[in-house]
Length: 442
Image 1 (cartoon, helix red, strand yellow):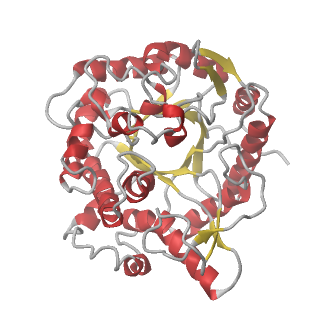
Image 2 (spheres, rainbow, N blue to C red):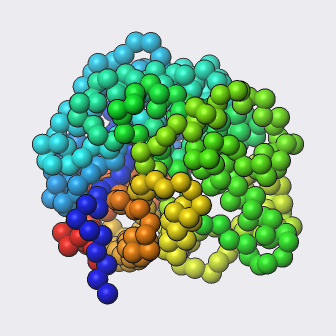
Image 3 (cartoon, rainbow, N blue to C red):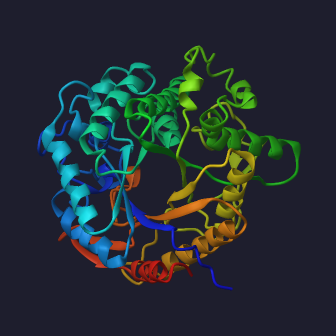
């Protein structure tokens, strides 16, 4: 059976600013929480930092030429807040805005749609010093920054993403301390999650009614290990924190009651003020879905993931599936289940898979990544056939990059980067993806 996506399906690739740009001290860029975190001994594998990364700041024209050669129709990138507002508020750094103007113009000249994300985790350090995302004021600062960027390039950008994966920003950054800013304060993590969502809603307002705006969430399919009450409750709790805690306020205008109850021992929710949920539930033009791996969970055992605050007895279980080099289980069926669920349980909304990919150790001949790509695109085609309004797919990632706390030890790129020389080499997965794009499907 042919797995065609139709002529209007959007084919893209994704990256983020801190992971590829480098040039952290150039053209007035201010420090971010990831600069500070990476500079802290023991926080990032091998002491790696994003100081150079893939040097995209200087090599963006070469990278856009690679995209054009692959036939990409869209490029999802993020704008570094510290490049635009070095202190997180106040003074605007025009040299930073000019970089993104040049990047966007180069994309458009190549026939590639720019898909900017306003916030992909690199909070200006002065805002963290003032309290970070647990502080309500940070949400307002995001809205002001969004208005600045929108005013600068709205004549060249059709679609905007406010936040990338607020779950990670809140719970990996403020509950586990595994991500910047490295705080382990569960109650503050819940506040951070709310203020991230509030910032999203305020940013939507700040950009105006004419802006076509979405948000990107890292969602997954959560299953219980067995049908026991403990395992079923574990799945409910993790699904609540990973998926519904973000989807429900955005699309239903309310936090799920069971998750609020789970979190009563952690927070009183006094940080949620009247009108906040209406702001958060501002109408969206699309929802971005980042999917990598399913989750199989069990209850009644030692807690193995402190990011899931309010769930003290939940543990991960091994589903016996193949794993990528980063240790994530591979199961494209989880993506299909997730897309079908979004279609059936939430208001009709155009969906885009905004990140999907895998880390493997292969240098150029990456058969594992090729299979991962083909299998996940296969279930995307099935979802479209079953009526899911899936409108596009962005592979993660265009380039090998700084993989957060893993440093440069994990490679997700369909383009291999030799970090010593910055030489770009197309992997087999890039060539296969180009073939899929040219055919309009598998």
